[in-house]
Length: 85
Image (cartoon, rainbow, N blue to C red):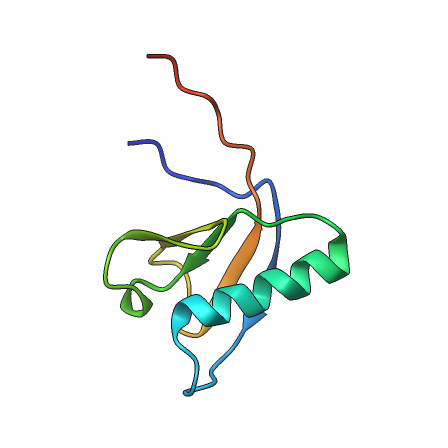
């Protein structure tokens, strides 16, 4: 399995205990859209923040990454390559 990478992105911090991780990703994605005028499609979070290694929050793929600190979100745009059957 090829490891995902961001082409462009921003670091977001959110330690609000009232929101779950997917709502935090949605909040970060909204900020990203407003600031950069582009739709983010990939976000990395610390593995402790996810039950599964990879999930979705709306149109954003959320992946665990051991280099991320808890409550930090590396969110942005990745140009996913089409795979040949």
